[in-house]
Amino acid sequence: MRKLVGHLKNVGFPRIVEVSENARKKIRNILEGMECSSVILVTGKNVYKATASRIEERLEGLILRTIFVTSLKVGSVRKVEFEIGFEEVDGIVGVGGGRVLDFGKVLATEINVPFISIPSTASHDGIASPIASFRERGKPISISTDPPAAVLADITIIRNSPIRLVRSGYGDLISNVTAVKDWKLGKDVVGEEYNEVAASMALMPANLLLVEAERLDLKTPSHLELLVKGLILSGVTISLVGNSRPVSGAEHKFSHALDYLGYGKGTHGEQVGLGTIIMEYFHEKAYGIGDWELIKKSLEKIHAPTTAKEIGLTKEQLIEALEYAKKIRRKRYTILEDLNPTKNDFEIAIEKTGIV
Ligand SMILES: [Zn+2]
Image (cartoon, rainbow, N blue to C red):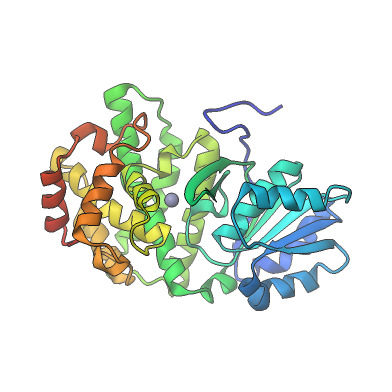
């Protein structure tokens, strides 16, 4: 029996996690070890050409059908479920980016079979997390799922994915720095439950990369591997705590605000990366703990956006999103609830940090 924890219905961990140059080659063995002989391959059109078709070949005789994800709607998952209703499916293999993996996680949870995650890139911590981001009526929603049973992060595949996505992954990982500070504030100010192990798991990979800020390069194998492991750890941390607290604070509220308002053209990781600079500034200013300049420098070093303009935001939109962020998920205590910054405070922050 699984326990109910927080707002997540199922909590568990990936049993198998492999991060290596040839992780993809293990897929057949892993499925056989799990006694999966009739699986559905979930992928995307572009990823299929580049990668998934070869994984499909490798799994000859085990794949019932291949599904291409086109939209992230609960209705699309239900449609697939309806189509496979009478077929014996005992596993889902997802090969792709965030959308594909999110779709696969929800589908596997709904039909109660293991999900094997093979990320085609490392753009955010959804690779191993028990949360999927869907869109309903144009608005983003989060759905809690089972965590993947296995994660095969193939460095060769990820290295060849669009660099913008990998840079975004760094933004999502670095956001743990402010997320954990917010969590600590929640513990100190409103007596929130806190887990030191989970906080360390979320923070350590981010800090290890920050130490390297001066020579950070995501093409360096050790840096890329650390990023991928860090994103997997972030996902596992969510399972450990039962919610996204260790990896999502005020910087994520800001990113959600942009999504709700429909502003800009940044990826999730680019938005939270920018948000991290701003929230770290507030933490540093109020409590003397933090180093927003180091975070900004590391983002610059990997050529990730550090200004509003780079992700298509005007100053007015940026301010509006920051104000809107204060209204999101108010029960999650962050630096925004703590300081309740005014419009003027936001203006000073984004000017001092050079975001506008
Ligand atoms: Zn995130």
